[in-house]
Length: 315
Length: 275
Image (cartoon, rainbow over all chains, first blue to last red; front, side, top):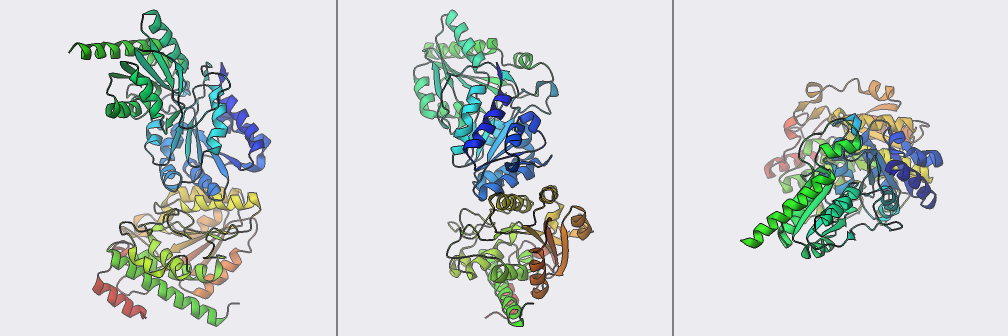
């Protein structure tokens, strides 16, 4: 288990040595986001603007207008909510090459409680035209995301986690924006994951197998643009779908997949995530279990979706 | 010292800007005349004298950057850009029409010479701060100018940017406040007082000048002085009259955001000596 933020912070500093156009901003949380590693290596290219999230996003837009590639960091809830209008106007609409780095995604700042949890950031960012949304599943993928995000021409929201999450992606794989990953073949139910619940998802697939249910697993490190072709292909071989994300079930991956399948291949679908409620303070893994994102929740969702598909067949 | 001939020429450009902006708004049937008219001398001083620009090469890397933070004065900016040759003058009559490049508020992706998309208030100064930081970092010699409304100064975002620009001692950044005293709902001092303005900026670490915003000589002198301030960003508080030049609009909040009818336009152009 590697802490995602620490791996990201060190890799960003390393990437800074390769790409001189990269500049970094933080809003007084560089010790938390770990952008301080970049600050220590490249103090001239690092701007700590204090607790001014909306202004930070605009300053980043100004730096981008002049040809730099700004990575602007703060907590995911602040970036997506307090700074939302700056993001809409000066980044998405003005199509400036700003990289918004949302640290502490989902419930990962678990003990600080619902004020610090980010459960609607993906919905907000996904609904902005021109915005790409990248959600790594583990520390390795967060590291792989850095060059992909920097080299993508245009606005990107990169959602990170505070937590130490189990490694779950195949080692050594580059991250390609707009591409998903088929991690496990299966023919009954398709599990589609976005973010750090991937290891839970793979465990659920194994449990399902022990119950005689064949589960495919797709990981979507890019929520937008969504790899629709991959999803439709995998879905065409299964009878039901489950989406898994550390986010409100409204507006994130679950919605994106339901929108796609509703149009192209209506299959029974269940959405695993936070069920439109605020969570609470507590240990991270326990919070995930308590608020609907346990392995058992995924297994139960898969069984429910499959039961529904069988009902359809009997009709 | 600026020669009298230059002052006269810029006064004439300001008059033309007023006429073009008003006519564009009137033809469009919607827009914001009051805040265009108050800023005419400011834009004339910038676009016809002070800014280093090349209309044949809108993306010349060393050009000065101007951001219209009070984006509702878009027709005035469009008029200045058209008169400087960034696009044909006739295009002004497409303002706010379907398929036009001239959106209700400036869109940097559509209009040559528009440095930054604006319209939602408060963003110009922080974006300008980023541009000024970028110049510092890359050793570029361009300067960044941001025109703000006085009502806009009620937005906290502006003061966040003021703090940041002061921290980084951005002497290549100049803010200009079009202090016309009136906002959408009424007089600024009634809606939410912002005075004492000069003291506020000074206490935020900015070099402050106050000028008559309709006096071209004072504007040019202040712009020159602002370019020679070291270690601090500079602000020019330009005292102006909302609706300046059109007697029935002057000082009237009602003319913040309503287009003149053809008859009203004719009256206004008459007063401005259209021709």
